[in-house]
Each structure stands twice: as structure tokens, then as C-alpha cells.
Amino acid sequence: MSGSCFVLIPNHIAFAYRIKTTKGTICRFHDAGEPSGTAGKPIFKYIEGHDLINVLCVVVRYLGGIKLGAGGLTRAYGNTAKQAIKEADIDEFIELARLSVVLDYKHLQSFEYNLKKFTGTIISKDFAGQVTLIVQLPESLVDEFLQVFPGRRVT
Image (tube, rainbow, N blue to C red; front, side, top):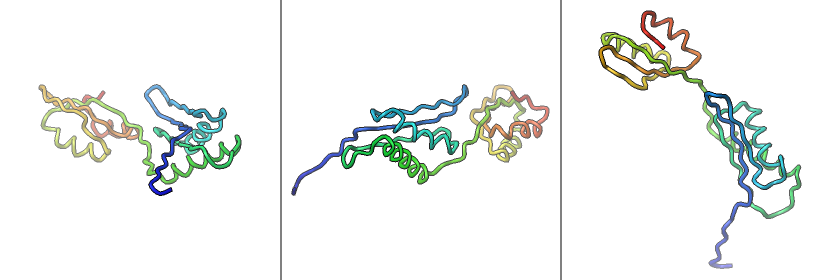
């Protein structure tokens, strides 16, 4: 068929996600018209089984070929999610805390230097009278951070 063009149109777009919020973890999956539990659920099981957080996995299926049946669909969606996640660049999830810090201007440079040791960043600065900073750093380092800066007003 010289000059012919074929366009593949997806018949099923199944997904699952797991997102951490301040109120807990939100988990959802969708079978996209496949038999119940055969598409979104196996995708979600892989995400949950590997304790992945803040992730969305979408699997697109085009009709054609042989009939898979419920078991075949479950394996196909699950294995596709497994392969996609296996090849993805996954970063470690680090819970961050935001703190407000008030200090004298003369201590700002020293504070910024020490904040870097805690892999912290300054989100905002206000120079009205004293310096008020909003900083962000890993939640696991907050107690140690507070011990290093006694006498500073930190909330």
C-alpha cells in the first residue's frame, strides 16, 4: 500500500498513581474500560509494592492481535508498568520541612553557610529590622539543625 498512512488510536488508557500530601497519601487507579481489576490495579500493585511515592504510571493499549483474557490483561498491564518503572530515573523521596528563622543581619552569612551543610535552601528573605528567612531542609535533619542554632528564633 504505497502512500498509505496508518494511525493507531488507543483503545484503553489505564493508570495508577500514589501521591503524598500533607494530609496523607492519595492512591487511585483506573481500568479504562477493561474488565474490573485487570488494568489499573496491577499497575498500582507494582507502584505500591515498590513503595514508590509521587508517581503516576500510564499504560496505553491498542486493540488488535489475540484476545488476552482477564489473566493475560492483568499480566500485560502489570509487566508493562514494571518495565516502564524499571527504566525510569527514580529519585529518593525526601520529606522536606519549612521553618521560619529570625536572626541579626551580621549572622546571615554564617547561617547561609551552615544551612548548606544540612542541604537546606532559603525560600524567602525579609530584611525589615532583623532578617526573617523561610528555609527548607530535610525533615530528618530538623532536630539536629535546631541544636546547631541555639538562641535563634526558629518556628
